[in-house]
Structure formats: structure tokens, C-alpha cells
Length: 124
Image 1: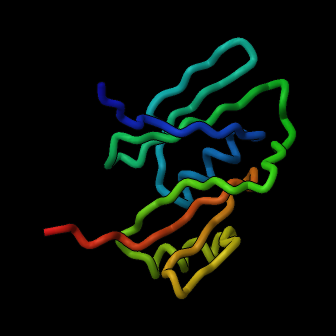
Image 2 (image 1 turned 120 degrees about the vertical axis):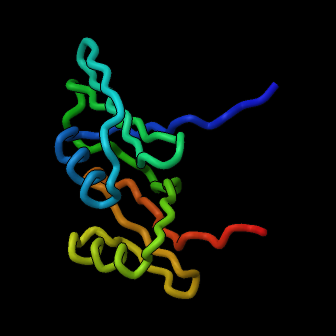
């Protein structure tokens, strides 16, 4: 038996604001959408890999979510770390930097942390 990770889900309080953020900050695009009774699911793709991010908007929960200690995150690899850092600095969304490790985090409109890492050198 084999398993393949296909998506992560986060709940968002303002779908349009989140879609704008993920597009501008990370270049993610809507791959598909499902509208249901009181909810909307939007699946975002980077256009490269098969793993996608599912944003869930519940009409009955327009306020930000309590993220507790927010000790989980998604990581995004970039081929131009310095340009990405400058872009996110201009967006004023960097919430934590660790220059020693060569990483930083940005926060989305609901406070979810997203790690930005340098592209890894392929193994030979």
C-alpha cells in the first residue's frame, strides 16, 4: 500500500483577500473551486508540482481563526531567494527571519506562517 500527499488545507476568513495574497506573494493560481451550501473550497497550484493548497471559506465564520501557538507551517522553495525576500519585504509580510539558517517566514492574512527556503541543489 502506498500513499501520496496531495494537498494541505487551511481555513480562511476572507477568501478574496487570501487569494490575492497567495497570488501576489507566491504566484499560486486557482486550479479549481467547489461551492457548497455555506462554504467555498479553492484549490491553489504553483503550476510546477502536484501538491496543492486548499483554502476553505465558511460563510458562518468570517472572523480570523484561533491558530493557537501556530506551530505548523508550509514551506515554499524559491529559485531566487534574494528577489523573493525583497518582494516579501515590500509586501510587509515577513514575520520572522533566520539568516543563519538561510530561511524566513511570511504570514498570510489569517496569520498562517509560510517558510521560504532556497532552492536545493539537485542530488547527483
